Image (cartoon, rainbow, N blue to C red; front, side, top):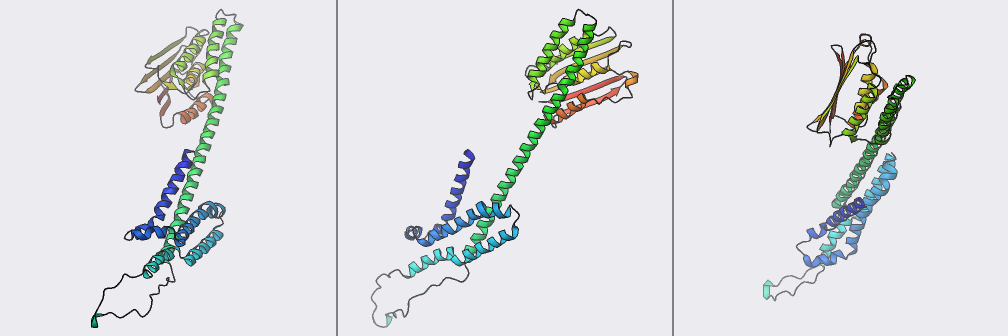
Length: 359
């Protein structure tokens, strides 16, 4: 509604300025401006250019030019040009002024005597319109091209807006699809862990189920949001680590640290969780010593994350590019365009993930 009112105001102001042009031309004759305003030639001047502008913008361009019927559009242009040239709206308006002046009664002349008396006029002055009304044709070209420029620009703007909206809808759909892939993948691995505890009749089976319920609540309730509090993501990671520790042997060492001003920070859900899950998936062994180091902190409105885990010899030749990591990379591109850095490397027997997110 606001846009419609704004457009109407712009059109009205533009036409008022255009209609005032003849009055600027006759500014030295204020007594003539009132009669010109009510004359049929002034109404012709207004009507012709109103018709040219709105017929072009509302009919000819949408129905012909935008439909690529360029030859027919050019033919309409020529016809409209000939009509304006025949009507001569500007010359008729201006020559009405001169004709009115020519027919005005002259004031009583002073008395002359003798040889100084002037000769009486032999004939009345006749004014004729020129064959070609240059000003009317110039105004026609100006208004026609202005209308075309405005209409094409608005069309382009609308097309761009639709393209941006379509791209946003596509990104939203893809992001929802990626989340849908991540959630079952994560829950499937966790349920396998609980199943292992249950088959061993482990006393921590019930606590592990409670931990899982906390994780599932986070996954089902908050993962649908674009961004969640960083504290919620950290709590989910903490529960997951506690759940994993129930089944780990002393050969696996876990160091988890979260510090900094995290209360007011937000993050895309499960972004960090994916890397943590990946570390437990590949760095736990019942035969060899392993270590998992996880650190999350916030500084200068930036979230930083490091996850390091032992890289076993048989895994060093295998590139870990599972569905979880690949989907997380895509989500980072969507949620943090040009606002994130992700580094995944293998150094000194360690698999290292470093992530920085700018809010």
